[in-house]
Amino acid sequence: NNILSELQLRWMATDKDYFVAHIYGRKEYDKVGTKGDGTMMQNSLSQQLNYNSLARSRSYVLTGTLFHKHSFTPSSSFETTFAYNRNHNNDNSHREEYYPDWSYQNLYRYSNNRSSYNLTFDYSLTWNKVNSLNIGSEGYFINDRIHEVSSNYPPFLHKEWNEYLYAG
Image 1 (tube, one colour):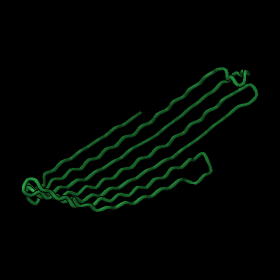
Image 2 (cartoon, rainbow, N blue to C red; image 1 turned 60 degrees about the vertical axis):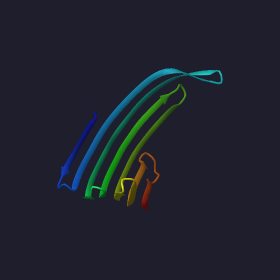
Image 3 (cartoon, rainbow, N blue to C red; image 1 turned 45 degrees about the vertical axis):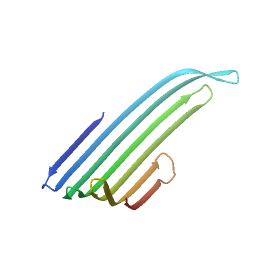
Image 4 (tube, rainbow, N blue to C red; image 1 turned 90 degrees about the vertical axis):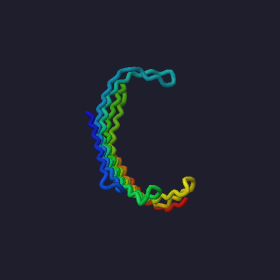
């Protein structure tokens, strides 16, 4: 059960201003079940085994980007880009193994999230058809959360902010 959607809009507001908006979304759901019978060999001993397994995964990705370019002259322009991304995933799995004298059961559940933001500014100038200059900045923020729901551990949290300036 998967869904994919995408939309891009472009607009030339004036002969010097160009805009683009892009949106993308994807949702997935997977379910896998397995069963089996067999023999486990260990140190020349054999044991019959039976197992059942069921795994489910639900995920989505959402992204959006806004872009603007302003042309001051044919040889100089200023561009701005803002991007957003959101990912989410839930994984659930259950496995049971049965042996003549013991059994094993494993259940795990994960819930993971990531959000990121990016903002870029770029000024570009060309002169004499062979020389160029680019000046700009880029900044981004990332927010991660990974939670093993089936355990008693607290979620793993990660936040990161980066910013840099460039000229060349």
